[in-house]
Length: 519
Image (tube, rainbow, N blue to C red; front, side, top):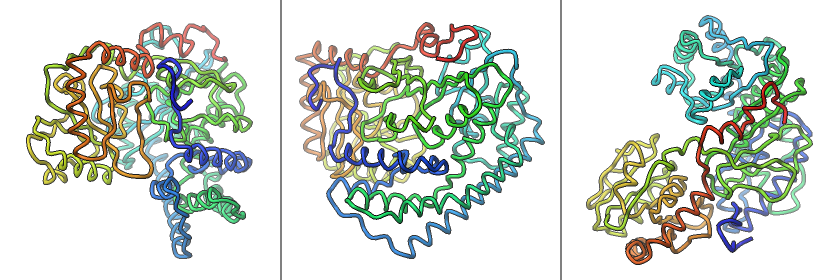
């Protein structure tokens, strides 16, 4: 439905028909590829981490460039270097884990709830504990109900041996219920990983060698070449880890997973279902995402391969699916509790908040458009935490100040929020703050905003003049039609979020099903 009649019926969609066509093509290709278990680790068939330049070429109607021989050789060599380096590091990390003495043995007489989240080692050191940033309050609910549980995290970020030892030792001292893959994987698993590294590229090359009959076939071939150097063995390792968990002597397993539908997720779920019959997987997409991120759509055409969640828990009605067999349910927006504790009144404010995306090429384009706007209002500019804001000081003009910290503090200070490719824009609009979504040019654009409320509480701008125009319009709307703004904001809160109450948490993950974890 391109133009939804109301907020209640609007759902996340691809936006561009070309994106839908590419999605369907990758879906069909993935269904064929997944008959080879190793290709479950490939990012392209999961529709994730797709190279932006190739996507932009496709969306703007350009033919994919021919891949050179040197490019191919370079990619293959880098694949082997990265993969064997990762495996060697993993072996040393296994030794470090043994030296630390960290391990967790779950009670074999009770069903086990495992919490599958990404963790950054540096965060554990900073917090001096494993603080769950993905499912806050879930652990408290599990403890309160006496449920047997453990975290089964996946690392991202730096994984130096020193840092690994520090976090293993710290978690041991804190007696935290954490099962790392290093605890369960054995010699035969590492031999399987070694075999994977050798065999996987030939399976990809076999797919690449197939005849191209369409432009989408040629795009797929280029995407496979561009991602050939990924160390996909780390995805396969999650499958082996899942298999080891499924072999534990426990009655049943409930898996609560922060689910982005990445190759790691697919592999882990497939492993969990390998030996344990009584396993229920809750794929939690308790975050906002734009319809152009293809991997976030759960492809039910691939259900036969055994890696689907048993229930999808989504952040709001906007992300529900009306068709298919998967069980979709709106769940508690556990990371957005501040949204339900905050009220904003904007009419008498004139300051602006600019939220920068993580991508450097986007930041430069946005700064150029902001410079062109020549804004006279006070401007608060917030960069992504991983961005070195100092590199961009020379581009700042007028009354612009760089801010850090809690975004809700700044929401309460501004009349309008400007930005691109961030879910924080949805949060601001749900509080009744008008949004200007910046478009930086043709090609892929990750727009989080729905059609409902467009040109009333949000608008798109690609030039400085359009930004100034929208600021003026929104200023007038806030003064003359405040009730309409507040109505749309309330609808957004219903579309994109669900208040994270204790009851909502319990119901979403069936925490009151005592002794029963299977859906």
